[in-house]
Image: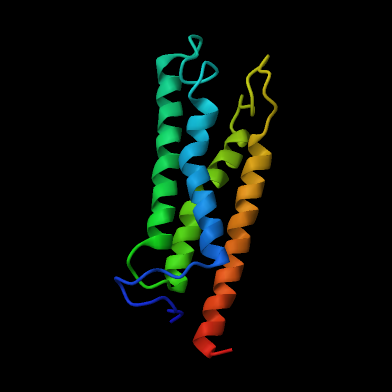
Length: 149
């Protein structure tokens, strides 16, 4: 319906939307490891093993969703509206679930006494805004290419 990319096997077209989704995909893949692979999370002796399990699960989820984003953005398939939707959903899911986690009883963005500021809401908001901008830009570009406008 909205195909504009070259045939499979040829170089994928670089666009602003694809670049933005690539940036947020890479951020999703690496962000939790940068933030959590330290003594406040993974190596925190005060955390019980099951809490560390869930931290590892969260980091692995970000890695998987970021990799899926890159797969849908740059994989050898036509770049369609449906593929754009999948890429944007993968790029956004981690950040949406991160923001929703504050709604559970007893949660906080940082631990008491932690010297780090609560940057998660800002990072999630910026990432989701970039994903929305990428989606809108690519949707318009695909529509224009389809109609020849």
